[in-house]
Length: 189
Image (cartoon, rainbow, N blue to C red; front, side, top):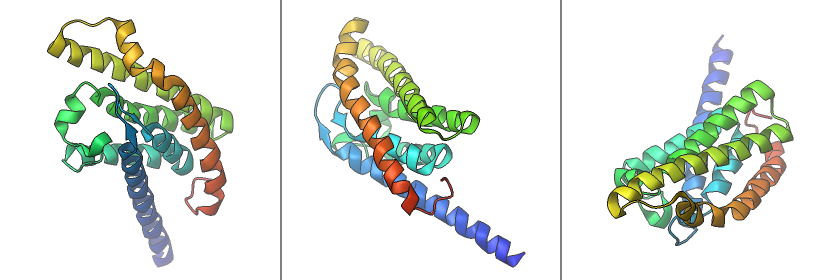
């Protein structure tokens, strides 16, 4: 019985370490950015990488920890920003949208398994939901501050320039995570 408790405690500790490292990687990748209306960062890569590498549950927890750290004032968002103001600002919906990506991935993994096609489909669907949520959020916040803006204009600012780079980042995340996973004793693979 004591051995079982030690093993369970070890796995819980390992889960927390993986979640923390995942949140840290997302933060570091958010700092690598090219300024635009919505900054071009490597967050999409990091979120996707952590989901594939750690699995839906721990990957989603990493995203949640990342968002909570930023909300608490730790500068983990693009351009070393933080705070509730960033999350409630015009681009905050895209950050929150990463949580939806994680939840979609987690559900797909749970119900459909962990095959490559499931990973790819879940990440693509999650990205589409992140785009949709973030764009709707952007339109509401931007319109309140600046007046009405057309959907196609917002898509031109916030989505169209990111589609190809984000698809490349998703492919890289799946490929790299697939190569790294065998070296981790993370209980996922």
